[in-house]
Image (cartoon, rainbow, N blue to C red):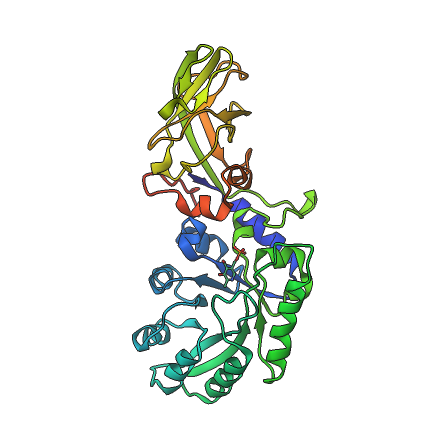
Length: 355
Ligand SMILES: Cc1ncc(COP(=O)(O)O)c(C=O)c1O
């Protein structure tokens, strides 16, 4: 995997252009969507107003390299010990249950924490009903353990451009919040940043678009995002097969004419999806080749019959600049988020020098 700091900065500039009035909380959970949280934080430091982590371990690791950054611990299982860590490490924390608000309100802490109070606006995953949300707000508003309260929600359908759900969910957040007085508001993920400008509010929370994917597929060419991760390997063998030959385990793919098959050093143990079907694209010598046969642990096989001169040692792009992770994901019936976060430790990470 190779990483491109300029692409990451380009994508951040697109967020800034789309939501010029909002503060930006960059999502760095799951090791920066597989891109390396420390590196992403270093590239974005001073250009965003905060970072989001999903696990206390992620937040603690990030604090080591980002001494002064605002770091938000997203919805997780909280207890007195974790809240104490949030206090000493100066983490903002999402409070998504009334019980957690009660625990925090009663807790003596070394320093008060900044709270992001989460309203359930329709996902029914995390967040409180408006009644509990209001009770939690009133309680925390008076608590000495709380420094400030931001109101947040998370959209269920922001990538769906043809419906009103996001507008309604946003309204639920703004009206519930307004009934409690003034608080900063946050709801927009990447899809909402791109497709629902009315939802930007005080803080936007981009994840996938920083890493180069537009989950709505609606950005015009002039605002296109750039791939930050290049996932590459090399051809390690080339074979001629005759009509009727099969390739790979169970010979799933069969040659219907004489073909050339290149074997590439990448497999499911590297994070390339095993369930990728025949026909999934890769790029060799600047041209598309297609997966031919089952992905195995360390290897995959591609049909290079239409590409001149493919030979051992040639570089193969599995996804990146020339082939978006999103396109590969569509073939594999998944999303780029899953591809990015599943590349395994075996794959060498190459970061540009100087950043
Ligand atoms: C609470 C919250 N906000 C924002 C995001 C960012 O979403 P996306 O990567 O789609 O921009 C996530 C990611 O799932 C999230 O859990």
